[in-house]
Length: 316
Image (cartoon, rainbow, N blue to C red; front, side, top):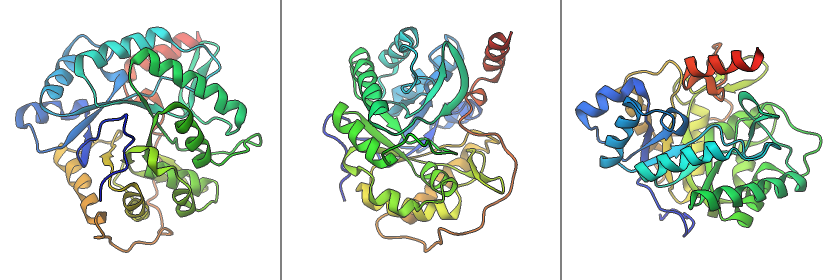
């Protein structure tokens, strides 16, 4: 089955892993058999030292994608052109297959919340975000890919479903979509809605990539933490998503309590069990593993010392 990747966006091989600094030594020493790597843009765009050197070396051997957390496409603040210039410089160096970020806002009035915050899903927000996407794509000289966020509330002002919003957004801008399967499950669980119905309404012809990750049960809600293995109920949802997508590239995210490279790779390879009809029958109602962890969407886990200093500066 061929993936339905939009014609204006390159296609990646099947399976990728996040490029994390705890794995730098293993990667440079062993050059493991991984199809491609996804790098968090902010971890590399402001570094002229070892991280920048590592991503250059990795990009010489593997396809690379840049995945950001600070574009703030939904904010009412003007676009941060300095941020975009630094992102464009990094992209010129490593030539990523694409640049992605999230359908969210991270701050307003010059303040940064260090969270990926949801937007009201309505026509006014759509027009605002569409305009900003056009500007970003023109500046970067390439299509932007946007990811569905994990959410923990719904706005009374929303008049559209998230799949309908993403469909209109991508149709009007030509941007691609990154479907985070764990985020779908987290969002639908917290909203008491059906994740399968969400997938049935998703604009698959705009999807270029999928994410997998672990989440944490907090009793009354679940949180997208990226700090543990993929849950069985998410694997079951992924089986449906993979079939619907036609088999687009899949990446495993692991950002907290990161295990060895081999353990992350083994978790990624489990996805093969859910492709091409080789689906393990799982229930979408399985119990969750209890834990207490921070939200993965907090930007502070990326470069803690820098982010802590920024937070103190903003609070000072």
